[in-house]
Length: 377
Image (cartoon, rainbow, N blue to C red):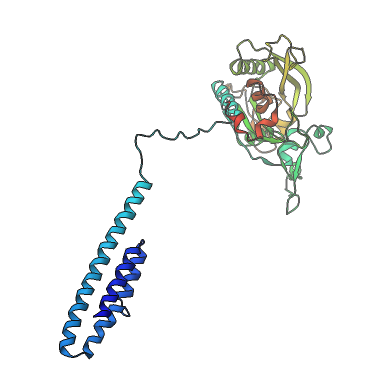
């Protein structure tokens, strides 16, 4: 009986100090398990005299019932306490103002790109896209810039090593298919014309790469937009009307466009495009070097050699959509037929447009990842 009393005392003390549910399980195993202290007493009853077995058995069963009840109550108490602690810890105060999440900002180049696309869409231009990793043929050869042409020096190129070496094709024109990061978006014009017939009105926004030193106005990676208008009867007057309307919508209605003679291998005649300074309203400032004009990009009438490279006929200028029986199609070397095609092309930096529109002083800010800069747009 003293042993049963000692077991009860030890169990009560251990139960009082138990603070975790796994501690309750250990006590159950310690006292009621197969090798538990109370289980050992109950097993030994069979060896006792009948009278003593009856007395000790009754006391042992009462202790067993006590231990089971105490364990059940303690377990329920700990479960309730744990649950209440979790509820307090995870409680939501519905009256407390919510945390305001920081909103993302469209990059200024993304904003200007969307605006340019919207303006040209209103003028009837579609958007075309192409790969940023280009071949030498599309980036240079098809644009009337052969390998030994000095004009190649106008573009500082990132060349890409091909594990298979230079790819050769059956077409002599495309004997060099070396890979490079495109230096302009003009290759997309060639790809588009290869699969479409005039009339064509497209713009090509995208990222281009130039291997050059970076400063406040130059980057090795920047955004550019090209435009192509090809039809049977297109002139410089059409180009100036289109580009004038574009800048009037992008900046202000009184923006003036000026064309200056220039040279590009893929256009003839070629022009440099200037617009009246958006910083000083053409009055003269440090940005425009007191001239009142800002250089914005290049343009010109598409060179006949470019049209020939993709199978168009640049000589016969009879209307493409004419129903006259005398306006017959002219077969080309590629087997396609094409009436005479003329067109203009232009290119300008979207990054430069963003610099001008948002009055940003340094082109390197666009790729800085500085949230303080981006939050302003």
